[in-house]
Image 1: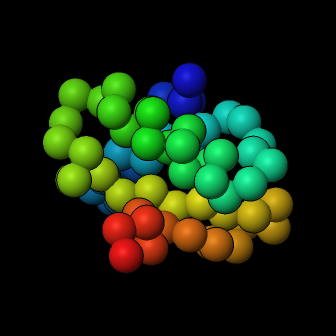
Image 2: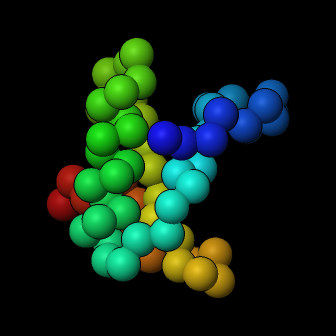
Length: 66
């Protein structure tokens, strides 16, 4: 279960943080996909990013569709 979305009105898009750490990028991608499927919106309109322990982005939803 993800944390509630951010309340930053400047962001424009609600952002969720999955509370778990994942062993692999594939595990993180699977968890993101499951959370996105639970939202009441078209999954094609949702973006996600996978970051490492240092906060560096290692994959985004754009990478997942290539």
